[in-house]
Picture 1 (cartoon, one colour):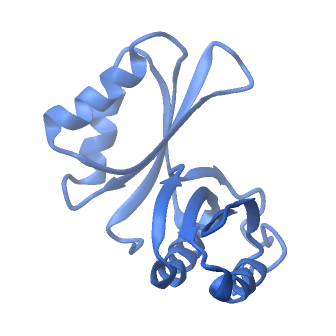
Picture 2: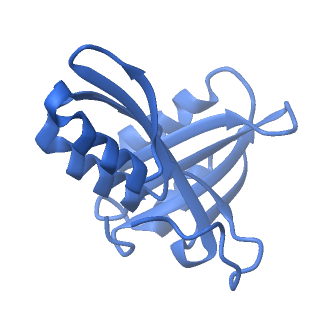
Length: 173
């Protein structure tokens, strides 16, 4: 995904029934495309945080923000610039893992610092969390094995504490 086309927007909303449906309905009515969506309560039970990646090819970002700002339950809206944010995603994936190819698969798991969660006679379940582009790379390398099932969480993001600081130990690759 290119930074110019997709933007991460964080919306703090009142933690009430129907708020997510209203936000999603707004996107549907306006024809805005949501690439990724993650929702969870905040440390204050009165509020939830919606993090979404919006495809600005479907609508200018300013229009998205203006429309969100009109919703009664919206408390705060922020766009997170990829250069000043830490973004992460979680993927659970079940991959075909014939015994003769398991060592090759386990090498990829080690290189990406993923975790094996479950092993069956001919399949393996693996999890990986990290930057969305890293998740994409890992998924692409697993495709030749045969992806049986996959679930990705969507991005979660926070503004970096210090834009010059490294957010974690360097990831491989």
